[in-house]
Length: 286
Ligand SMILES: Cc1cc2nc3c(=O)[nH]c(=O)nc-3n(C[C@H](O)[C@H](O)[C@H](O)COP(=O)(O)OP(=O)(O)OC[C@H]3O[C@@H](n4cnc5c(N)ncnc54)[C@H](O)[C@@H]3O)c2cc1C
Image (cartoon, rainbow, N blue to C red; front, top):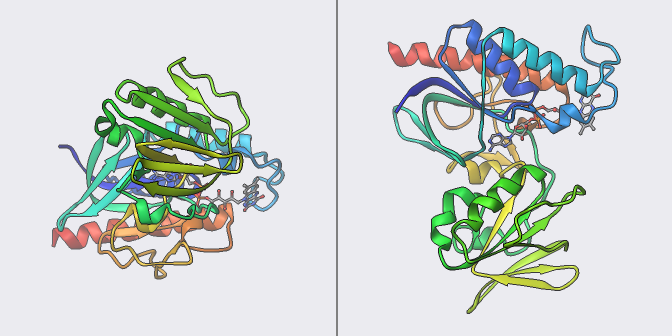
């Protein structure tokens, strides 16, 4: 398998900045995220605190980031990391659409304000999963519920429906969910998760849906779930001033390392994380 020098997970200001710095330093990089970069950039009405760009809209900043990436010949690998594992000499990254390897990793995944549902963490890997494409094979001839926060997850439902007998799709976004007729769209608000002798139960404000398994597809996975052994406090990854985490070769930057949640702080930390990763790679060679 192709092995990258630095894998950068997340395409907000932190990840984009890390990718640019790593590329300037001639590293072989993998940038995993979305071709739309970050909804938190796209959504901003007017940004007044980004130096040199007063009043720029989120969409304009997004376009400027995309142009910068393109000019530097940095492509985005459209995927979502589901698990990152320190293997000793390298990191193995499990994505929804593929697996990757890199000597170092920069986490620039942004922060999620969503709290896990009661019953979610206790049943993770035992009926609850965060990746439908990864676990679809387990649902051959079975039923599953997908609760999704973004329209982009509809393709995960279509994929799962090719294997599972029955798929319930719970869209937690405003746009209409347009899925093929074998998928039952249920507009209800999830509250908690329960496990019983028949399988899993997604309890909602309106009632409950039962199936063999539940997939929770959010924009972010809690960092402690993403990387086993990662030190996290109050949902923020612990880093030092070099953006090093407690795992050698693994760096973090942006909102995920703590407040203030700001574009320029994220971009600045992305730059520091990339420089630290470059230093780490030269130490590895020695
Ligand atoms: C409406 C709004 C207005 C704002 N206005 C301002 C402002 O005026 N000034 C200011 O300084 N800040 C503002 N902010 C805050 C700013 O948006 C954030 O601080 C900034 O976007 C954080 O950048 P980031 O790169 O750390 O994370 P994000 O921008 O959140 O980017 C993280 C990216 O990583 C992706 N990701 C997550 N998990 C994975 C995974 N497992 N695999 C692959 N990709 C993953 C996410 O989908 C996302 O695209 C605003 C925020 C909002 C919501």
